[in-house]
Image (cartoon, rainbow, N blue to C red; front, side, top):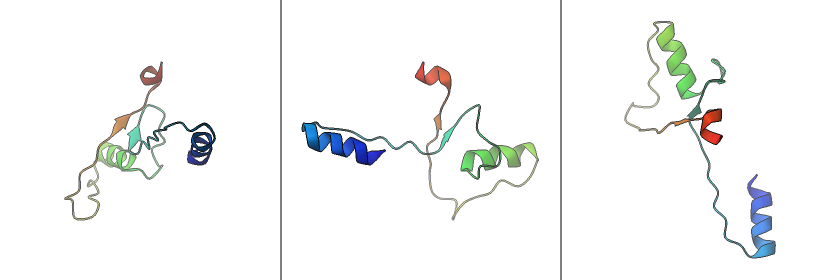
Length: 71
């Protein structure tokens, strides 16, 4: 997706901003997609120990993605 935006910027001399949204979650996420939020929810529902990644000192931010957010 970045390449077409940068080509458009070069051709038309416009400034662009690219947002990369990571750690998104929402109502249609697959429970076994391997993402942090999915793993956390599945482990909690199964009453399993919650996985701590790395040393547990990092922080993350999460973004709820739903149709109402883009409507």
